[in-house]
Length: 78
Image: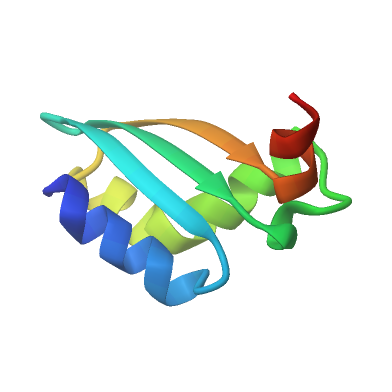
């Protein structure tokens, strides 16, 4: 699976987020910023992404996903 395909899946499911995907060979880094993560702990944030990608993880198209998931306020504060 290509990074742009993963990015398209995530953008379609989370249209109000800024999303970037890096990597290849089944190992990817997903960076997403959006209000959708407000009030969610790290596990809940990751579950949001896994729910979208789970079919592709189960099929083996994606082997590993690292995530950097933040709200706009967290970005502004850093």
